[in-house]
Image (cartoon, rainbow, N blue to C red; front, side, top):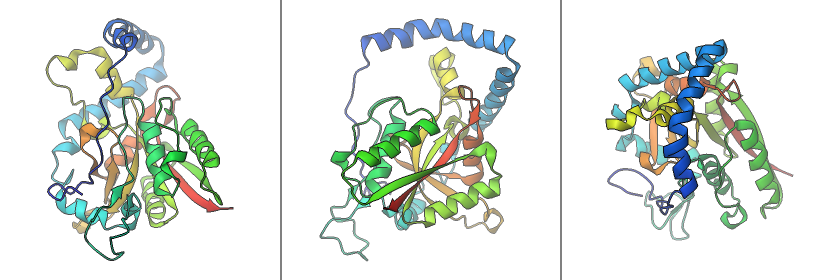
Length: 300
């Protein structure tokens, strides 16, 4: 652990240059095509227009008060509390020289990893969760793209587990969409999942609902970045829950997320109500809200 910042020492991903065709698409085609497509949809599709307006309001509100500017975001005291929780400790492989009740980190190895490139967050989250459930790292496929929807994510993670060498167990997944539950049900689901030693939680959320647009300089005028912030979902594992000291906020605990994008420097905290809004945001592609996914290990 980096004791100065309270973060686990998770290895940074190696730099992978963007392929030439991707560069042409990103910097040439999309800046021209996206404004045309979005404008057409806004004019002709009422549902799309209402959803986009709602998403803009959510992200714009977060821009005015981003979680990244709040004291709790990566507070060292909260991080130390986090790593003492069983739900977070499950993502740390204890060394043989570390006593079970020791506060020393020894040569403990994080089972967390960052995505190696954009679009690989779902696959990185699968690897983090499966390793924490005891699946050998070498039996889990390398990161890849394509894990963009909760249903597909579940299908693939179960297939990976089935093909793994971790015999005698299987996993079950449960998708809980933000729009399908009340806030109280959302909080209760998180509590139950984090209290279950055989359960891990994947979070599919609109990160910009927590951090805002985050665009500076001329980048904020790039159509692709604007669209990504409104429509681009993200996957990361939820590590734990730390209660707030303020009794008036007893039903709004801090939720710890390990962001698979290394630019956010590991684990951070957000109030549960803010996370609920980020998970309840609509994916314009599927027209469904985003979700948390319970991944539970079962003996067979």
